[in-house]
Every structure is written in C-alpha cells, then in structure tokens.
Length: 110
Image (cartoon, rainbow, N blue to C red; front, top):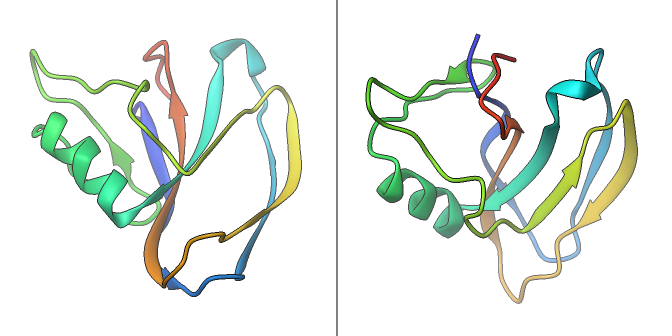
C-alpha cells in the first residue's frame, strides 16, 4: 500500500544513458503517473515532504497530517493509462543519481 512506489532508487547514470520502461497498470482509473527524478529533485520532494520514507520496491507513505505535491519538478513524468512502453534518455551535462517511481496523484492506494 502507499501513494508512491519506488522502482529504482539512487541509481547513478551518465549522460546518454537510457532507462527502458515497459510497465502496465491494471486500474488506470486510479490515475497513476510514472516519474523519474534526479537526486536534486528527489531531495526537493523530500524537503517539501519531511514525512516520507522509502527504499526500492517499498511504498512511500505520508504520515498523519502530511503529504506531498505531485506538482514538484521531475525529469520525466508520464501518465500510466493502461500500458507505457518508452525509453528515457539522460540529457544532462554530467552524471547524476536517479529515482524512478509510480505516483498515484489522487492519493488512492497503489
């Protein structure tokens, strides 16, 4: 259960590297969104959401009275309306660490 599940956590990638994504959702009515964040973006999400914890494959869950905004900046964001099959290319000037997750914006349990 949770509002966001990390699929990749703190993975270092060089410019030109690619992340291949092939993912499906059973219930597209829940409005899940795939997000890819740089380390700086991830830290911004956390600094704005001090009530999150997470590790690979485990859900991020807001604590009582807390929450997080899906409107924060991400390197990549794509709705999961059934099936997503794409490739994300790293177009940054230097290496960075990346986080990939599925976020359910209306805050329904994933």
